Length: 499
Ligand code: HEM
Image (cartoon, rainbow, N blue to C red; front, side, top):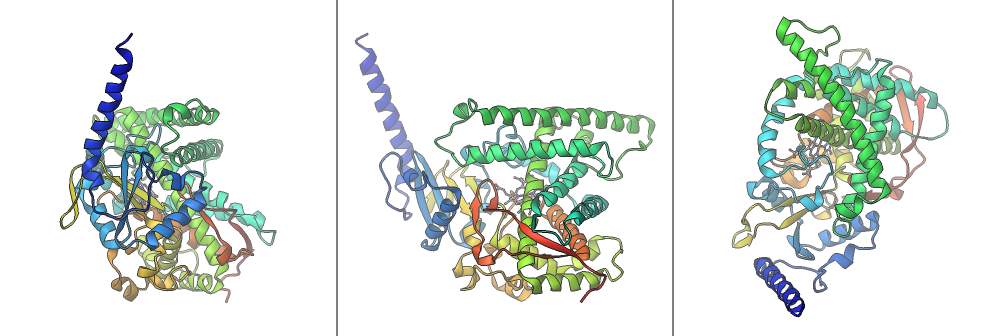
């Protein structure tokens, strides 16, 4: 027994020496850092803050940082850059294309594009770049159209009524779009209504749970999380989604085999290249589990982001009537009869609408902060070499609201920030709501096309107002940037070509 204590002492000493040797190259990095506490580093600065306060603190640090700042969380070193040049360099460099596990531990989704480790990601991203090509997206336009029509119709009960929360309508709409383009679920099929509803609740629960886990990165290890009631409901929701997905996968497999063998098209087969079919057609490339994780990632990454962005956008255009009017005028120019087919070309002509969406994403970037980790040594600036295993905190929200890059009126809503002549004057990485570089958002064009279709259909039919005030809006950063409170608006029906 007498040797147990010395042995423990030796192991502890060994671990401390090992940690110090490992940390030494990081400690000696010449990067400014706020005062810290031994061992825990800067953890005390964020612990106890709610998600709104964390956002404000990040903004404070960012505004007071010339180039970058470093933070310690126990033995993890994190560097937060504050200039577009550094954002560009980090996000474009292969050395930094890893995602830190601590920030992306998305239970059940670890093999999807968003969270996967570098080598797997590299292989899979090549495949998906092809899946999101323009001709495929073009074939999705009728789906976007159908879903948008449906949701605009569903809103009619709110015409001339009290203020209502517009967000759930939009969430259901983008959910239907994603389910239809990923899994081939027909939007107007009555039998699908119940399934859409169940998927909507299950995905929401999974996203909320992941957010609750993400916000407590260090103090909330998965093993403890798994003992909580939330984790069990989280697992049950993920299990429901998994079973549902596997059922559809087996149906699609039969349909595809049938097409291969008989060279015929199933009556009920979608006329577009849905994501699950693309994955199944490449036999042997993905296991069934990988297909499921990819599809759930696309579902989760695609539906909530677009819906949140559009909810914010609706609120902004309800507040700024002149902006809404300009959008409406533009719609009437591009769709003079109101019922013209929605094409890529026509959506591309909605340039003012695009500026409004971009300004929404500038002030309220749905992914307010993203992370990267160095896979190997990385020379961030001449002579400044960042060792392997360092985390970068890329605070898009702070960059987008920085007066240094957006001027004194950085906090104001002004779609003209995206006039071509103003864009030309800025560094390309000053506006990066979809991230930047090879590991950026794969759904950028999908998102723009689907959001434009919804706005177009909505504004053709309704005028939107709100009693909420722009200066009183407050945001918090969970997994995505959320409004504190509800997106409360009123709607009235428009007459055709109303002034
Ligand atoms: C307004 C809408 C959207 C915004 C603001 C947005 C933003 C982002 C951002 C910032 C990232 C990088 C995340 C990171 O590095 O941690 C990302 C990644 C991703 N997004 Fe989006 N997104 C949107 C819509 C969509 C849509 C519609 C889809 C799919 C249909 C999608 C699928 C993905 C996927 C799969 C990734 C991971 C890409 C990779 O690592 O290769 N997103 N998105």
